[in-house]
Image (cartoon, rainbow over all chains, first blue to last red; front, side, top):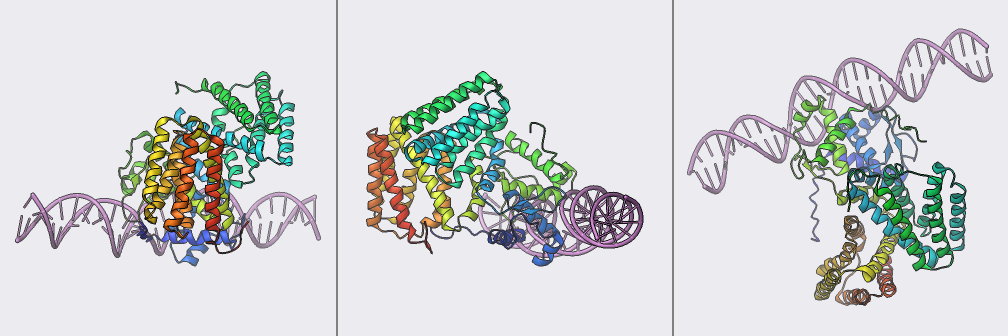
Length: 240
Length: 240
DNA sequence: CAGTCTTTTTGGTTGTACCAAAATCGGGAA
DNA sequence: TTCCCGATTTTGGTACAACCAAAAAGACTG
């Protein structure tokens, strides 16, 4: 176990190149947002064929360390937590084709947010509460405009993810939003429905403001579970 | 916004092949654990050059949909949540080179586990409590053997991640274990230290068994924060 | 039937070549 | 001079042919 159980036959040239370029990117030798050197330059630098170089580039692209639109020079992207979640998302999407996958993901979201509202109620700073209050106001102001309401809805929940001041949660929020979006966007919307959601948000906010974690958690649970029930119908077949 | 904002110049042949192979893998046409067809077969099937085929294979490999050891036939891997977390992990590792990254990750773990022990205390079933009890016993039995203690330690925490019965958390536990392992393994160990950790586990377990979520959460916080303080010293420089 | 040796298959890599689109350059028009 | 447009160069996308070494498969022998 403790032995280096990875013979790790790193005999693949492209892997070496990937590693080296990764180093350069995180170290800033290849600055963020700058274009990657041309493939023909890289093959000279690494003494490898273009095939190998392109393989390395493809790997970096899949990792999210470079943005490569089809006919353009790849752009270097210094990795952050968004990058991490994005690369996970590409595979995750395959698991969201059936309802079970969506349910698992949504359940995890509810679980996280329950903890987040507790955290907000117990340790949220004054600025956090104010940010929440502002997001709530924006949410209310958008009730008539379902398109805008959707965005302020996401933003309200987003504030919760910022309270721990941990970039992982910020990224996670964006992840949830983008992964669930395709399923959520087909949910029928209306000012009445928006109003219901706004009121739920208000309940959550008030519980947090009043420093009542149990109440906050319950309000959030009710809100998200109701939303789930609401979208259930939009799925094709049955579900658990 | 609502317009298909993705011109998505799908001019890349390999992308099409990737998609098609992905379909085959999730649909089971290419069974899990079976070897991928030889590259030369694939180039005939898709009417593309080997260059393109290999690019597609590289992409699938990076996504975790096939396991490709250097000189062997790639093995098809039907994606699950482990796959998702693994592919995230490859990028995440780059962010764990500095202490801030490790701290962020560890903080998130503490946050999750605090919620998990609450959940266990409030809604854990009898079997869950029993599993926890068994893991605790194994943990105690391994106090003298630091190597084995480490494993039972991870296993004890792992039980917590299984209580929500959501495969995402199971995968997340494996993720945390493997991502943090390189930093944790350099922590000095001793039977005395193991005993301290075991007692902390026992406190957590008792609080859960007694259905006291607040107590469970606090016991877990103490345990994990103490562990963090303990490994702080093993890092090179200062930290926040 | 087991174990060993030979042949075939297959992945890893290189090199070259061609095309089309992007980036660059340069000259002419305003 | 400045700006715009067209010609030229650069660069990414794809294809084909070939070679090597290791793996897999098959044949052969004890």
